[in-house]
Length: 249
Image: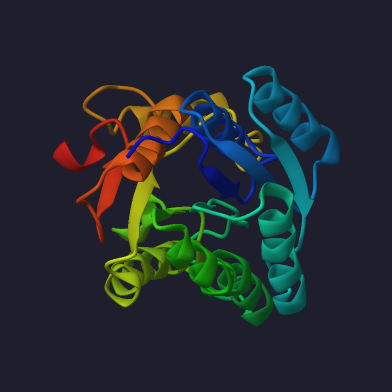
């Protein structure tokens, strides 16, 4: 599908991956509504970058952890672009808790993680679904993580929430066919994001050493795969892992 003139709503657009996705979609011809909760200065810079490519970049403030805010945020995106063809569920939170530390992973961390990482994308997708179906070229791309496919990641809660996103992708692909395709990317460790800015060089090197390519995950590779899913005509319900080859180790 040619993305020229399409209207995309990217959540978590103030972060490192969100920025790459928004700019990559703009390069492909999309106008982009830039969903964010924090980081007004960062999202303004993304909007400027999108505008410099000749596309509309419209910041949309909403809280993915609040049901009413989600409904309002989707409507703001629709109003800003006069419709939505593409939804990228990228926003998420993470709080690191070692797997063996069950006492620290209490109900508050668990509930917050599920609310933002799984319930939030579900409600955003549900609110956007009628607009995507009516567009005639509806696309959803969810951002999970390789931690959703094996017991690893920042915490048990994060791993399970991302596994839920992968299964949600499959279920929505069935529910929204044939008018909307739904796919998913599952990145490994991505440097240059808000979530990973506090990592030590030792942690980064330990992660990269597990990959056959000896590196962490490229933000641009993930963004490019998101765009490819939006362009594809006959792919739905699929999850692509982008991790430098950890699964082959």
